[in-house]
Length: 618
Image (cartoon, rainbow, N blue to C red):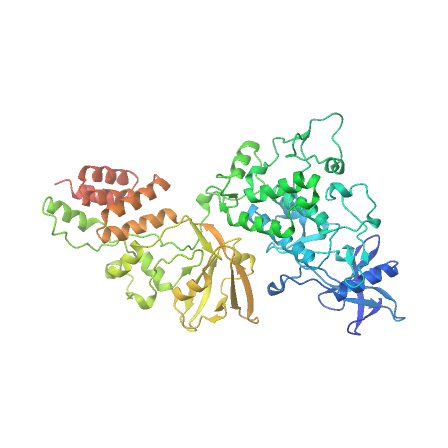
């Protein structure tokens, strides 16, 4: 068992089991929890000088607030008992998977990784942010390759093998070069050159970064992959790169094949970055997008991703206009993002109101209508009050979803008297002001938030997470059901109302919210989550619910508009047809109303059947 000395602390470091071996060094676990040792076979003076510079000038850790290690950076030199430097101590990156296993569909399937296109966009964004941080610190990676990037289940990336980077002494300008490069990632102007004599710049890294992003967004495919239409055999990847040949080069000799994922599916800003890098940048490398320019493009693209209406694991760009992955799966019989049909995908909570069931309460008579007064009174005695047991129990539980920053009013228990009996006849109507709040609420097809629901612990007066949407920021941020939300953006949630806590958590897409979370048996933890956009899975019911409120407020024209929207979303919504029929009748069109009531009854709506039976005498 080898014993070394940590030069920065003087502590003894014991090398335990070996976990890796390369041509230049071996990597060991150590007795220092959370740290590994990299021990060189034959360290040269130049290598040790480079190591000293890296230890003295580490880059800023961009994800320190997330308790994440972004760089396996040299922490301290390790010396033997004679005082000779043998290697260095570095933080251990845990829970990461090699990048190829993240972007390659076959690897994902073998490892049973549930990853979607949104996750890959986020991964690309996070990798880009790390490279931007390194460039800000004047480091050049030199050898970006898939084995050197690890990704965890939060889409957070870590870069390892950092001592291979190109390092420049800020005092005397001496350059300690990156001596290696990887096929398929080397820019055309460096192919065939001797790396040991080259001083690289971040401009060369720009090319490598673009290849990594392409592989992430296009299912592991590379820009230099396609059907060769030129003479002879298909050239090797480096030769294609040297000649500037890729799928979308002018007069390219590479053509897309049936399985090629087309460039147009990505957001136009991302598409422009690829064209700038591989076309404009071929002639003039300075025109390649910087890491920061990629970062901005990927943020925009991530914001424009929307969930497919058919498969719960399919995301596509709003700018493309349809789900490419559904079309590709139908055409090829292969789905690289397999998931469930949305008919079986149930989001247990949403910002929208829950389904409104009928009660036996009657609406007051509409005395101002003289003609067909008895007919109208019959309608009003049968039409539902539209504020239901489900809504009241929802209010009683205090549950409030945080998928959306909408200003929809949902009364808390203190704002609504809740009957103690379970008898629906004892349920009280919502007040006019509460109905108006629902009637005036905005309905959005897409909602924004972090993907949690919560309710208040009546004993401790603290919100407790009751549901977490799969693959949401909350899920990726390791929040758990049962966690207490103690603070939001530094403000205590103790004795706050549901609405106030919701407003603190909600916000704009791609903005951060900071939570202090309590978990039984653990210390309180601070976490930052980035708000994201979700499809409103309750959009259809939202329209029915608002129609219900508007009907009760005798706003029949707007009630008709809402239920027409619900029917457009689902031609089999019997409740929407029932409300359409009642609204048409109350709006003066008796025959169209009966037509919609008959449609509702044919779909199995019992209220419509009862109503049609009761009015046969009129």
